[in-house]
Length: 256
Image (cartoon, rainbow, N blue to C red; front, side, top):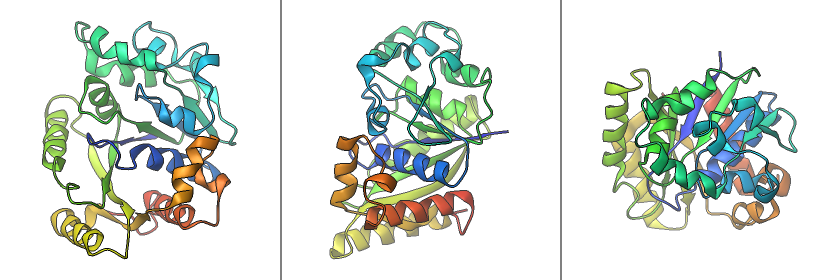
């Protein structure tokens, strides 16, 4: 049985895709069989692994809307153990097209039920919104990972997100849990980062991962080279942080 993590936050610019890409890469290098699903029409997670969107024959849109078997849309990444179900901007149309479809919230879950390959971990990069695509991810996932930016408005909107999670549990996916909350773009030199971290831990307690992701220029550069940080600059502080976060997700001192 595989476990599916949805990486979700309705706010943009919080390091959600960076977290998805680098968690997937480290998990794969740790020997886990990984499927990364890009359910964001911006398709940044796909690009972060060097996927050429123009060269794709199929993408997640074809699976959700056209009923294409999921294995036909999955592509191999350059990393051993890591496959990708890519997105393209076409996926933006799925938001409208799914509205009138019966069981629209279950489309991704139904597709995953037909996987022929045995993946240990599925990690889903969600759009920066509480959209129907995000709801599909939450319905298909076992647990969520929530990146929170270490800035003033970090906790604003989290109540809306937790309310959405509660609604999904009540009506669509009663087993959905919070795997952990990760503080991103952390700058130890500023009082603000420390205050945000303190307030987050005070509010969410043990659900907050011990690992914090620092502001790091190498993390920002890596996507433009189509590489996760483990290959772009494995010695950087950002790489060390994501390796530590990966170990927490796997259970070595993870958030409860």
